[in-house]
Each structure stands twice: as C-alpha cells, then as structure tokens.
Amino acid sequence: MSAIQGATRAKTLRRTSLRWRLMFFTAVLAVLFMVALLAAVRGAFLIALEKSVEKRLASEAAALISVARVEQGQLLMPADLPDEKLNTLTAKLLGFIYGRNGVLVWQSRSSLDESIDYRPQFDGLGQGFARIVDGGGNEFFVYEIESQRLRGQNVAFSVVIMQPASDYQAMYQGFMQQLYLWLGVTLLVLLGLLWFGLTWGFRSLRGLSAELDQVEAGTRASLSEQHPSELLRLTGSLNRLLESERQQRERYRHSLDDLAHSLKTPLSVLQSVAEVIATQAQSGEHSQVLQQQVERMSQQISYQLQRASLRKSGLVRHSVGLNEVLDMLCNALDKVYRDKEVDVLRDFALEQHLPMERGALLELLGNLLENAYRLCLRQIRVSVIRQGRLLELRVEDDGPGVPADQRERILRRGERLDAQHPGQGIGTAVVKDILDSYGGELLLEDSALGGACFKVRLSD
Image (tube, rainbow, N blue to C red):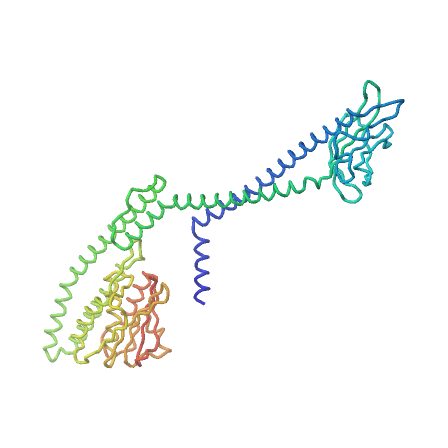
C-alpha cells in the first residue's frame, strides 16, 4: 500500500513540477518536429528516387531509339540490344515500342513473360514519367517518349521503358530503417540536451528555494540578490514581505508588553485588597466574589492577549524542542500540585521538535498540561506519533475522563465540566485558536490510562 501511495505522490509531483511540465511540452514539440522531419525527408527521398529512376529509364529509351531502324515503313530492331537487361527473361527492365494507333510493334525479350496492358499517351508532350499498376497488382515505373523522326525518316513511334518498383523497395526500406535509427538517436540526444538545459536553467530556482528554506529555518533573515535578473523582482517582493512581517511582529510584541504592564499593577492591587478583605470574617463572601472576578479578569486578559498575538503562519517556519518546553512547564506545575506527586511519562525522542513558535507551544501545552494535572489521579503521559508529514501530540491522564456526549461541548469557549475548580473554561479555546493559526486540529478521545486523551495534530 505504501508503495502505491509513494508512486501516486511521485506522479502528482511530476504533474505539478514546472520543470516536468516544460520538459513534457518540449518533448511533445520535439517529437512532432521529428515526425514532420521524417515525413519531409521521406518525401524528399522519394522525389530524388523517382528523378533518378526517370533519368535511368530515359537513357534506356534513348539507347533503344539509337539502335532502331525503319525500312519500308517497318521497324527493325537488332537481336542483341545494348543493355543486356532487355535481352534476358530474368531481367526486370522491360522495353516496348508502339505505333501511332497504339499497336505494339516491338517488345524486348525481357518482357515476353509479362502481361501488361499499357496504352501509349501520344499526347504531344514528347515524353512522360509515371507509375502504373498492372492487373496483378505489381507497380512499375514507366518512361515514355514519342519519336517523330528516326534516322531522317518521319515516323510515329512511342518508346516505353518499364521497371518494377519492387527493384527499389529494398533500397527504400534500408533508407527508412537508417532514417528511423538516426532520427531516434537524434531525438534521444535532443531530449537529453533539453533536460540538461532545463536543469541548468532551473539551477537558479533551486538556489532561491534553498534560500527560502534557510529563511523558514531561521538561519537567514532575507533573500540575496545573487539571482538572475528575471527573479530579482520576486526576491525583492519577498524581502519586503519578510521585513513587513518582522516589523508587524515587533509591533504586536511591544503593544502586548505595554498592555500587560499597564494591567499588571491594577490587578495586583485588586488581589491585595481581596486578601485584606478576606481577613475580615464578615467580609468573607465579598472577598470570595472579588477574588473570583479578579481571577476571571486575569484569565480573560490572558486569553485576549493570546488571541491578539495569534496569526496565520507566514514565511518563517519555527521549530521548538518539546522536551525543553515540557521540563519548564512540569517544573512549574509540580509546585502547584505538589500534593499529588504527578508522574509525567514521556514517550517521544529527546530531540523531538514541533513546528511552532516557542510562546505558542508554551501556551498550548501549558493549557493541556494544566488540565491534566488538575484532573489526573497520579499519572500523565505525553507522546508524539508521526504519520508521514503529520505530527500528533497526545496529552493523556488517568483521571475521570470526559463522557463521549460532552466532548464537543468541552471544546467550546467558556464551557467547563469541572465545577469544583475555579476557571472560566477558556483553556481549550486558547488551544484551538493557536491550532487554527497553524492549520492544526484538536481532538478529544479516551486514554488507555483511563482518563482523557487530547490529540493535537500538526503538519510538519
């Protein structure tokens, strides 16, 4: 099955590759050109062949006329003709002489076993060359010349020389075989040169692609100008886009830092007031309400700040080590839930990276781990599974789990099933917003540990 999928993927890449497209259409044009060239060369060869045959038969007809004599109105021909091919039955060079009325008055010895019904033209043109087919389907080259005077005497004869076209068939077939061979070799060489030329021509695009990979990996800040002039406008636009993206990110960070700083002090004051009020017995209920509202404000501010910082992934592709982020989060959560003594199992390679920004991964994994710490009994498992280019991050716990009919509800913003712990139910909403910005997906299923299993799917 994997082999079939690999072949399908390779075929899709070939269809979408610009080089493959250009090579395909260039190859089609080259093949069409070779077919047209084949037809042209074949036609030129046949024309040259017919011209050669015409000249040869014309010389044979002239030789017959040169040895013919007329006495008392009768045509006399020597017993032995100059061309031996006209004297033997096995030869295929045929000679005929017709009178004005179209009656055959003489024929060569080589034509005695042939039954050819030919009628001279007597069209006044003097000579002509044609191809005819006899009753048996045999094809002949025919040269005819009209003779009005012979050795000073007025005559009216038509001298006809014939030769089977089959005599030249071997020559034609040999020529066509050589033509097919050389044109085939030429086509292969041409296609090889075209592939080499396209590969060399696309070398600049491969260089641009390599620089884009470096930009995505964070090892290069911008694209260089060492590219063909046709690509400089593209690289300039991409560099401006990269610079605009960096400036926008800086503005977001500065704005968020300013907002967080401006809200930090008022919230701290409110928290302190709540703690003071809590020491007064008669104000315990008011203190609890105040603390809940302050906690709600803090969570809502964190959520809105996180949403404001989210955006669709741009040109720069980030990658963060999972183990390092998990260490940081577990150290903090172990202090908060020290009474549980939670055991976090790690089922992934130490060098495992996730294609996210560090801050986004901290927020996403922090929300999932906080839920797992809060609801688990003693054990949590974090694992990563790769399926092709798809990465699946799983956070599982051994807690009570989530009923199947409540899973869709818990993924909504503000929905909570656990009413025993404070919070506004926005943790999974933050996770979903982060995943939306990276084109990811959040799923909730049962865990083999007995509790819930949150699955985060990302494209590598």
